[in-house]
Amino acid sequence: MSETAARMIDRLVMNTYGRTQVTFVDGSGCQLTDDQGQTYLDFLAGIAVCNLGHAHPGVAEAICQQAKRLIHVSNLYYTEPQARVAQLLVENCFADRVFFCNSGAEANEGALKLARLWGKERLDGAHAVIVMENSFHGRTLATLSATGQNKVQVGYDPLVQEFRRVAFGDLEAVKAAFDQRVCAVLCEPVLGEGGVVIPPAGFLAGMRELCDQHGALLIFDEIQTGLGRTGQLFAHQGFGVTPDVMTLAKALANGLPAGAVLAREEVAELFHPGSHATTFGAGPVVMAAAAVVLETLTAPMFLELVRETGDYFLNKLNELAGRFPAVVAGVRGLGLMLGLELTLPGAPLVKRLMELGFVVNCTQEKVLRFLPPLIVTTQEIDALMAALAEVLAAPPRE
Ligand SMILES: *Cc1c(COP(=O)(O)O)cnc(C)c1O
Image: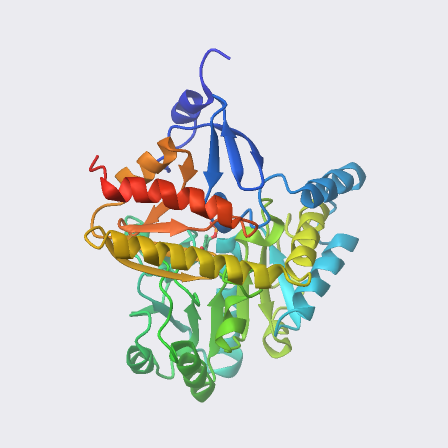
C-alpha cells in the first residue's frame, strides 16, 4: 500500500475525530501492537469497551462459531443467542425485560422514549428530564440534547425539549428542578466523560427518593460504569440504589456494537409491537460475544479481583499524587474507572505516555482517565506508574 491507512482516513473519512498518529494492527489482553511493530499497554480499552481484553479467546471463538452458522435474520424472528443474553442480564439485575440495540446513544434514545411514554401514561403528559452538568449521553439529537456539555451541542439547535441541567452531586438542585412536568431523571452513577466524578454520599439515594415522591423514572446510564467497570456488575449495585431503567452498551459485547435498555415490568410494558425497533439489534454474532462477556463477568471471583486490582491502582495513583503535589490536583476511582486530575493540560502528557508505550486518555482537558481491560495485572499497573512518574517529574508542555 503506497498511501498509509492514516493518510487515507484523513483524506476520505469525515473529520470528526482528533486522532492520534498511530495505526493499531493487533491486540492481545492489555497489549496493542502498531503497524511499526511497537507494543503498547492499553489503559483505555477502546473507551471502556474491551473489558475482557483484546482478542479474548472465548469471545473470538464464540464470534467465529456463530458467524459460520447464522449472522442475521432480523427481530421479526427468534434467535438463540439473544435468549441467552436476555436471561443473563435479567437474572443479574433489577430489570424484568430488556430491549437490545447497537450503541450507547441508541440505548439512551430507547430509555428517553420510555420516559416519554411514562409521562404520557402516568404523569399527564410530563416530558421534562432532569440531567447532570458534565454528563455524556451520546451524539444523536435527543442524547446530545440530554448531554450536560455545551460543546457537544454547538450548531445543532433547536435541541430536543426539555432537559433541565443540574450540578452532579447537588441534591438540592435536583429537588428544585422537579415539578409536575418532570417524567424522569437521567444520570450516570459515576461521570465518565465528565472526568471520573464519584457522587457524594446519599446523592443517588436522594434522587431515588425524589423520583418516588414525584412518580418519575430514575434512569441510570451505565454505558461506561456498567459491566464490571467499577468492580460491581453494575455500578448502582455498589451504591445500593436501584433505578427503574438502566442503559448499557460499550463493554456488552467486548467490542462488537451492542446496547441494551433494561427496565422493570411496569415500565417495559409501555413498549408495544411497533413502538420501538431496530434492524441489527441483538444479532446472533453480537449476542454470542455478549453471552461470553456476561458469563465471564459473573463467574466466581472475577469482580472481586477487579475490586482488588482497582484498589491497588488507586493506591498507586495516590502515592504519585503525594510525590508530585504541584502537578497532581487529585485522584479518584472506583474499581477500574480511575482519574488523575492535573493542574495543567493533559494532552501533552498523553502524547508522551504514548511514546513510552502506554495508551491513556484525557477528558475534561486536565483529567487523565484510566479504563484498562478488567484483566489488567498489578505488574502492568506498575509499568504504567513508572512511566507516569517519569512524565510527572518533568511534565511536557507541548
Ligand atoms: C460512550 C457513552 C455513551 C454513548 O455511547 P455510544 O455507543 O458512543 O453512542 C453514552 N453514555 C455514556 C455514559 C457513555 O460513556
